[in-house]
Length: 480
Image 1 (cartoon, helix red, strand yellow):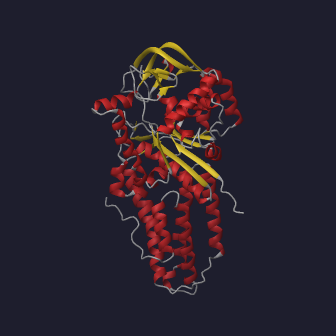
Image 2 (cartoon, rainbow, N blue to C red):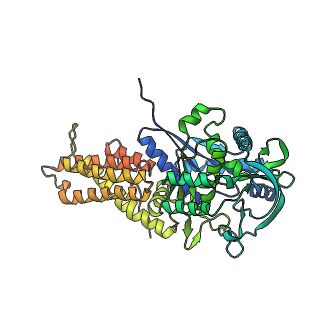
Image 3 (cartoon, one colour):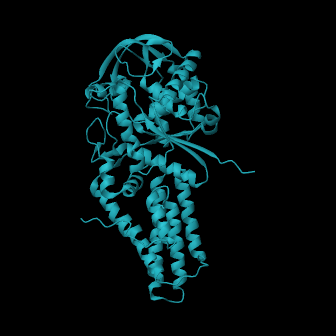
């Protein structure tokens, strides 16, 4: 009987479709892609979810600005985000839109379960609201009277009757979740942030908007005058994409899973959503990975700040794998990181062109000149080096340290270069065939290690190492 594959589920957050895709979100989806590819490499059955968040006030206003109905606007921009799959060579196997009928049905069922648990009630309220975050803001969260994530936007005052979620009810339960699962939120300093936030007391939050003021969203079950608040609606995508509540077999197979999110989503992903799951009687997420922002100079790259870098432009000029490499090697998995074209081109030339590309070219060209035996075996000392690399690589990826995993790979590339210089196989000595054999094995293993990171490059190296194709420059050197 064939053994069933282990199930693995990973999801990114859903970007709002209020602007073009930018490089800041490319980091998140590429990180998730590496994790998904790594788990497939381990033989697991992977469900990788991505999609678009299409409801809320800023989407509604943006569609009005462009003179389009909201659905027409969302269709156009969702298509642009789905194009990231080809541009960034992503392996997600599900693209969800919060305007999908099955998601709307799931969001309404989720509402009913929270309501049946006594966690939804109505009240009048007045609050300062950041349209950029689609969230209410307390005075303690503001800097100079503005949202720190959207300092160029005026806060709005919302005063109306809304439905509320009893967030305050879940303070102790959330603290227990964090205590019992010390790696629930990574990195640990983000877990400490959310623990401190929770210990300070949780306030119930609004989960609806009056339809007459904001008609674009999921209708509140049993009340046509209200629309479900965008955060309550959108977070349900993490389970609606798995078929919940209709396909419980699939849901139970894959849930709970890992969520990848930016630091400005810390509260929503690791606290609000987890409280909502408790209310609905469903298991909490497995893990929440929080990454930092990409900056340009000292400023965060942001749609709202208007300083975005277009990933499509970078890809068209330099290729997909160089962008993937820079973001995964140069940007810390959990801290803010800087993107400049100067640093990008330096990494391209030094690591990819002179490092990896040059090694592949040297080895394959030497191998083509030699009559190698069909029965090729690797030297024990080379096998030892591969085992050492595999250990560092696997440990780094299990801890989501993408940059450290790449460092381990490039140490193997450096080892291979030194091996060539030491043994000088071009002099055709007695051991030259064995040295070339070893180097071809090294290239094959390097290609396997690179597969989650640089899938296109890895495929080419594998073909070159097996002498199936004539080697071509992997990364032509950029002119300064």
